Image (tube, rainbow, N blue to C red):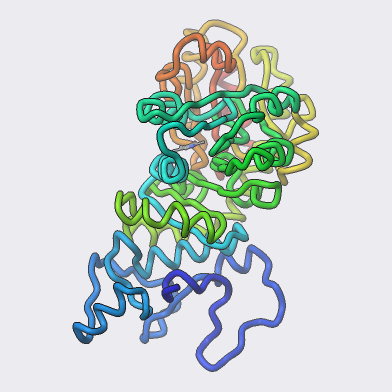
Length: 408
Ligand SMILES: *Cc1c(COP(=O)(O)O)cnc(C)c1O
C-alpha cells in the first residue's frame, strides 16, 4: 500500500510518538490526516498540481508497480486530497475514504463499481431525486434490476431480500421528507443474501450518524452539504472497508475519473475542522424551530426526526445523535399562499441547496424533486404544499421571528 493511502489517524511530529490514547473525533477533525511538507507549515498545504516527477526512470517504474510511496497523477491521488480523505476516514471510523468531485459521482461510483448486467439492487424508496434517477433509469438501462421498499416493516424487507441481491441502498433520513430507515434491521437482512449495504449519510453527516456502527458496509457523502457547509465547493466521498475498496472501487475510480480537485479538497479539509461545531449548533436550532413550527395553525404537519411525533422516533433514538439540520413541513393552504409566505421571509434565502451556514428554504415539488413523476411524489408525500427548510448558523430566535412575520 502506498504512503498516500495509509496514514489516517494522528501524525506524530518526527521523532515523537503520537498520543498513547484514542483521540476524540473532534480532535481527529483538526489533527488527523495532516501531512506537512518540509516547510513545517501550520495549516494544510494546497498541492495544486496534476502530475509528479521521479528522480529516475527506475523510480517511475517502481512507483507504477506500487513498490514505492509516490503520487503518480492527481486522478489517482493527490497530497491535499489525501489529507481530506484520511481526515474524513478518521472521523467516520472507516478503513478508507475516497474523495470524488460531487455527491452524485460518489453515489454513482459506490454502486456502479459493484454491479453488472443481471445483478439486483434493493433500495429504500424515499431518496434524493438524482439518486433515484441513477437507480431507476440509468442502471436498469444496463441490465441491472432494482426494487424499492417503503417503510420499516421487517416482513416486507425480509420478503424483498429473499433473493440474491448485490447492493442495498439506503438514504436515511431521506431528502426531503426525513423518512428514517432502520439500519440494523435492513443490514442484517441484506447480509443474509450477501448484499453490500451502501448508505447515503448526507442528511446526518458523520456528526449525527455513523452507519458503519449500525451494520452498513459503505457510506457516501455529498461533501457539498454539511462538510463544506458554506456554499462554496462541490465534493463527495465514499468510505468503507479496505476489501470493498480493493475489490471494487479503486479500479473504477482510477479509470472513470470522478476525482476531487485539490483546491476543493483544501477547502473541505479545513471545513472538517469546524464540522462538528457547525452541525451541533444547526441541529440544536433545528430542534427548537421544529418545535415552534409544529404548533403553528398555518402549518399542517412537520417532519423532523427529533420530534416525538416522527413515525420512526424509536429508530431515530437508536441510530442518530440528533434530528439533523433539515426540517420539512406541509403548509395549510395552496401553493400560491405558501409561495407568498416564502417570498415574505427576510432572513431565510430561497435556495435548493441544504446544510449551509445560511438558512435556506425550497419547494421540492417544483425544484429538487420535479424530476420524479407526480404519482411517485404523491406516494412519498412530496405534495405542492411541502417545503424543505435547511437550518443554518443564524441565531434560532431570528429564524423563528422570520417565520412568525411571514406566517402573519
Ligand atoms: C445533495 C445530495 C446528493 C448529491 O450531492 P451533490 O454534491 O449535489 O452531487 C446526494 N444525496 C443527497 C441526500 C443529497 O442531499
